[in-house]
Amino acid sequence: MQRPSINRGTSRWTRFLAVSTLLVAGMSACLWTLCARELDGQRDQDRRVTKVVTTLMSREHLSQKEIDDEVSRRGLKTFLKTLDPMKLYFYQADIDQAMAKQTDLDDEIDNGNIQFAYDLFDTFLKRVDERVAQVNTLLGQKHDFTVDEEMITDADVLSYPKDSTEAAERWRKRIKYDLLVLKADKTEGQEAIDKLRRRYENFAKRMKQTKSDDLLEMYLTAMTSSFDPHTTYMSPSTLENFRIQMRLNLEGIGAALSNIDGYTTISKVIPGGAADKHGKLKPEDRVVSVGQGEEGEMVDVVDMSLNDVVGMIRGKAGTVVRLGVIPDGSTETKIYAITRERIELEDSAARADIIEEKDSDNASYKIGVIDLPSFYMDMEAARDNKSDYRSTTRDVRAILDDFTEKGVDAVVLDLRRNGGGSLTEAINLTGLFIDQGPVVQVKDSDNNVQHYDDLEEGMAWKGPLVVLTSKFSASASEILAGAIQDYGRGIVVGDESTHGKGTVQSLLDLGSQVFGLRSAPNLGALKITMQQFYRPNGDSTQKRGVLADVVLPSLTNEMPV
Picture 1 (tube, helix red, strand yellow):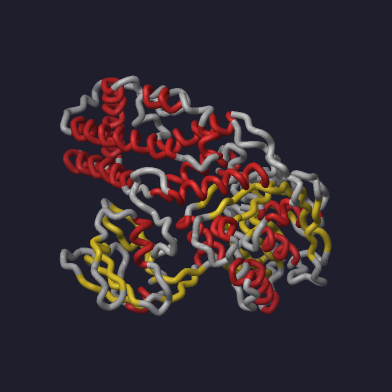
Picture 2 (cartoon, rainbow, N blue to C red):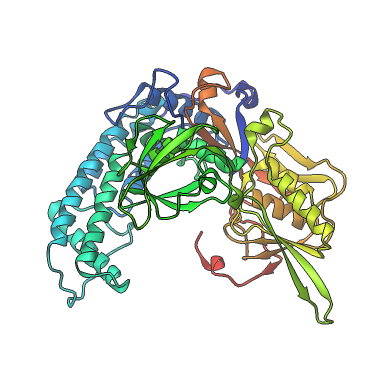
């Protein structure tokens, strides 16, 4: 329902508390009384977070739109699509009942009420149980693969099943199709049946392990993304993972984990990390229990959600975590005590390579290639004025200095899989290749324009420069590529254009918004679009992207992104 507009007399920037981060792109114990419970209904924490999110959306979003009936309608459709994207679980009657509330949800969330999300998710879990029971029945039947049948896989064309009979027929075709796919992959007979049974039973287990924080994130993001696809609510665990990706380090054992048939499985041991130094943990080993310290209780983690297991294994550097591990190829459980360390995520940092070639005159030349996956920056360390904080610009500057020392003739900066990151790093990194001047302009909803310039004299690299881009190069990547192009400082090579994202997001820490303290409880964050950016020449990259000077044939150029 429509509501009166909010007074915006106060400057939007003065309303923010200290923790706000410009982007172009969990707690191990409860610190206060509003702790997470199982999914038995809305928590006080949900109400508090929802109210601050709706307030910030109405006041601070670039569009300056209210949360109204249209947002409510679009948000509900997105939430339903998030839960059941292929229309395999809900009945049409479930959808009709949900849609009857489609113009009420804006009023409910404005009052901090998200009980609707809990009720709908409860219905979803019931339908999942029903479908898994159907799957087990269907897997016990014989399927005639000599009969030609069709199965619609386009969810936009499909309707929801009317009843259990229609749902069973849809699932019969799906199981038949799944068995054919497995047969093509040389898996058939009882092995294929067992594999499918585990697949859908594991899906049901994962859904039942959904926590209140997860549901809140799904529901609020469905609503906020109705404003634009880049505005999202991050739960506390998502926020912590985001911070890890930005600072490129974490405190833990240094192992990548995956979930295989209910077992937390080691997929990779990070070289130089705590687990690597310990020497016993190997890929394909299964973690079946976790204990804290030298004497803490060993907690069974079989069938536990991967996020929960990760949360138990991570911890403060210098502390001990004990893992109950079944080594690959063994049936015996061994206990490994590993002292946690600070782990550097070098695979996500800038990487360099030097390629030596010969030209038509047989003269040697060197090409320095920098692969940059994101524009990362340890924002917390920078905010605390730590002199040694990790950043994209610092890492790339060191690489360029090394290139100069080794006589590199030209540099290729590969941004083809770089979806963005820190606005500050986009500006600073561009400054390594230009000699002072504007890098980007940003405009807010009040049409205030601010210029961000490279103020440092000189260039870290003065030689020939190529910027490689693709449709996956977005946001901060487009700022850099556009500036390099506008200054004539290098050429952009790759897909016809970059992604076409021309907006700036701010990361607003909700704990700080609620409590007014930097050390407030982790309530997650709102990543909200507040500005649009423009190239030095005044052009926007929104939807258009940065057009390549030289287009190279590629699969990504033909992909709908």
